[in-house]
Image 1 (cartoon, one colour):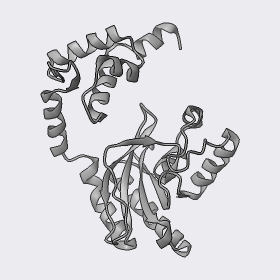
Image 2: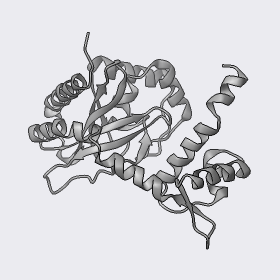
Image 3: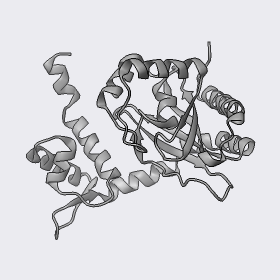
Length: 261
């Protein structure tokens, strides 16, 4: 890639998109300095981007604190999108069938390739008193847990290497990722098996099982995952749980255009 190409990929449009994403994901108002730090941009550049977005109603400024938040038009667009029939609605019948079959919580996890992260977009919880509350729309690392590795294992190797190089630590234990040779062997085994099972990688005391979802171009766009408290997990049921996930993930993938060869 040339210097000119790199500059184009990090131009004002991309920076505005990153800034909108930041404003949508943060829990509170943000200063120019903090926004610039998050985006790795000069404060002057960040200020110009905020001014542009304010003109379009995408950003609002608190006159008392001089801090910024998502604007009313950005909220309006988000509300409009939430009422459209998207992946969340399309996946729910498949998730409900999995939960009916196994009695455990199941979720659709989307892959966010721009940031190499994953996010739970839809979930159906377990009826058991002991269960996990699943946060929707919060980005997480793709390097750990069934929610991550059920996707990571099916990505191109170049992308896998880039993700591994970021060095994200396990959210549950703080452990660093394994060496690439070890991780690659683990990912190859997951791909051959068609699903992944992890224990306490993202959430302490949780067993996760996941299988990939593909679109019409055979690209992995996410996964269906089951989460089970480890004290309730029966290893003898692993195959049945995995089969249910693989079958429903395959059916959903077919419904959005994927055709297996």
